[in-house]
Length: 304
Length: 328
Image 1 (cartoon, chains in turn green, orange):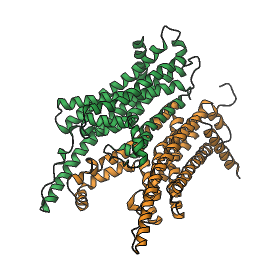
Image 2: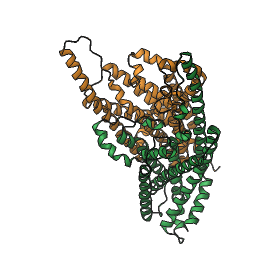
Image 3: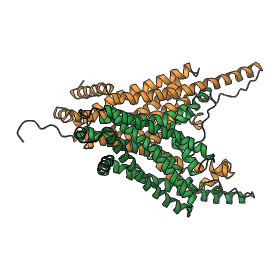
């Protein structure tokens, strides 16, 4: 039964223009990340050439090759920013749409006259939404591979493994936001309030919590090469203990470790940075399953 | 007061009252207020410590009879940077939400076509809703500014002077224009969409592009941002070397600047940061120089808002009134 509900929801998502636009957007931003990576590579080559000429004219030795400082997968640095920004918003919308249409069209009332439990229903919806995101990320992965081959010319098995690990991590991170979208839709009757509450949660997770735990200003979250913020204040010495709760920071740290774009750290540390995302996802799933048992499907939600 | 002005004010009052009753808006406002308050509190706490250190240095220097004392490197207004950044990101979402709510409310309750059947022109309706939204944004921005100033004075131990108040007021006016543009965007997208919620999603997509993606691309393309710690530093180039290399990148820099220019958020940010001493290079200059330096940003802010307001007027004017009488 879970499979049936998931198949039906997948069909609805395919028909939803908003979800389709989201899918195209994700593929487009992956392509943009590739173009930016190519541009970065090209810029470094040109700046390096100019620097060599400048130093030679001044009778100084050539500067060190900057590509020795640039990891193979640094091309994907921008994806580490785009997933929490664009991907998470897409995930919210997908989760939201999975739940609200049945409510506002009165399908819930009809559906539960059949032999389907609410747990099966919720799991089917979650399965469909996360499957949609998985397919989207597979598409992004293919675009990334093409971009890496175009810029680096080669792609070793190690890099391919890292790339796969990054997208699996991203899928787990986005699943959290699918569940946020579903949960807010179950907690409110108006579509707009549900969507805006979900966006409120996203804003808090993405911008407010990192400032609280690490002193990162909102616009610093947009740059893939963020310098560590000064946390010398007594306030941050206390709040930085709450960094494991900042799942966006944990995601970025884990993604940097997996892609090899941040300083090398032990595998156990990388695993530890993934744990908060998994706990958040599991906790939200439990909340969704608990909430759906109490949801009143006799009342239609407002289309507003 | 003319009949037309009276009708515009009626609509504006209705818009204000309805917005204050919206739970969605209250939730987002609460997030903005808490985030802004927290940001200013953190900055002000740190500033108080630095100011105390500087005061101690000045007192010691004076006690030793030194006549040349280094001026304070601190800029109290720059502590409002977080507040402006939150207005740029969360404020824009609030503005889109307000635009969405003002149209969807009338559409769902079927009062939009009814309103258009009254002696109320599309221009009056657009002007009234826009004015109501301006009143809400003014309340929001003024409250944020007052909280910021009081926090700087009481926690940071540094009250701003009248010249700084003037510059802060100008930054607040820019914020008002910025939020108004996003209000119009939310209202237009909602009025044009078949289902209001889809209009909201489309407006949020545009917000994402304008506020987050375009500035991010502009930053990422910056030649110096290609490596952690700076590409030029990694190549062992000093400032003169950097300038010499960049002369070969004028076309590239034009493209990068063009991408940033397309973002309304970047124009607001540049102006607000110039007014609030966030960028050190602006600090030595007076207001006339700053206004001249940021004239393009001021022009873009006005242009975006005017174009979007005209779009709103056109969209609302095209809303069909309820047909009255007859069996057709």
